[in-house]
Length: 617
Image (tube, rainbow, N blue to C red):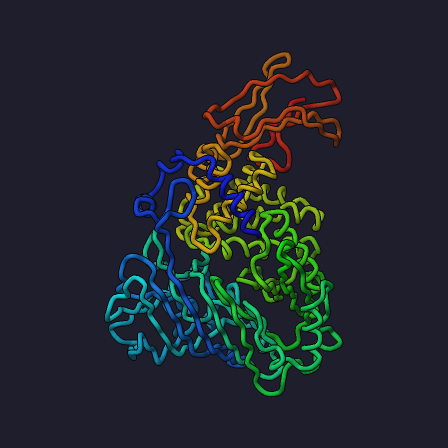
């Protein structure tokens, strides 16, 4: 996106800024961050906003028969905060399978182990006993007490050897699917985030909530046995050293082609695809929050290149890698292209920010920077839905750096809402109706809590409603309130402010109000802070007089249709702002319907927990 466009968006947002009402509900730690100049009350990063820098150099080996990854990692960590750090906190995510650790899910006993093996730990040039008193391991964290605090502007250098066992049965978001198929994630010792809101993130990964990572540069070399291909976050640096002649030819053709190239087909999948002996795949990724990779021996591979930024001509290399028997995956390369085009040009209307996207046919549905791990689906519509949802995560959380641990609604809610239009057009189904139906069955019940409750305090359906359904619907209602064009512009404004940083909910709320030119606190308070739920009722008074009652107090648009048979005509509409002053009912005038027609309040794209009181005949 050209600088002039970004400047125009920033100037538009600057036209209106104030201390919005929603800021009166700020927790103390957020108020402190504002007072110190890290954040602001108008949605912009503060003048003192900083975040720390991380650089990873990894040399790893995949051991298929053992189901392990081992290697050496060197980490450079720069402290940019105006406070010296007395310790370093790292995450060892595979310790979620460690004996005795707390987990949100039951896992097969055969996947339980003694934890990530750490050896040869060196901190700032000094050997440190990984089992000594300077190192503490608890949950999935490893904390290292420093001999000298890490001053502002200083860089700490750590190196260590490590070995991690991959799950083979309880494959939560990743694991070993067979001796020849792997999706490897949460696999390397990773720096935790130190930020302005909480200091060190010392939450332990218990498998339910997701992640919060530093933006980092990765230089990763992955060694695999002969015949094992490796796809990963970032760009491959040495294709001529690892690919066989036939694979290299197909790869280079796909890199230059706007049409999908079948690099590996059912007819060629058993041919040797790598150089003989072990091969080391060298990947580099710049300024991304995580790194994952996949490996397979006999998978098919479809790929192509496409322009993702029409102004600069920048391209992305898009792949689908899949089992021959996964019938839906034969369409995934095409679906991925179309999804990336939609996200780049329509909503959010920001060019796909990375050079690669690989959708790997593993299990479930899980997102990583430039990588997706998806299971097989039964229908084309399901493939469209799953693929577009996971690719949407490119923007939220990865490009935007949101904290999924505490604010799941800031990534899952968006990944649900952003592709609604795309899914309807390509998948030929109504994803909004499907999403609302699931929420309406639970909205307003005692286990639904406001989305601002930290996500890592929630489990089960409570987590799902606050992370996915309610916020996705809130964003949809916000789009209805603003109008599609204004909403898209507001999204681009928010993205321009916070991409590559770590926004929290108030940053989003306030940036949207600033851009819109109106305090939207009434909307955000009801949808994200209150226990309100969607429940409108249409009530006949007399003659042509009717009342619409907002029983659940949630601000949703009022749509009244004159219906006859299967035909409906919109005869009355008010946006959600009709409720912003706190009223709980409105009086309206409608003509008396004849015997063959009736009035219907709402439609399948508007939430309502009780639709039985929405029709008057």
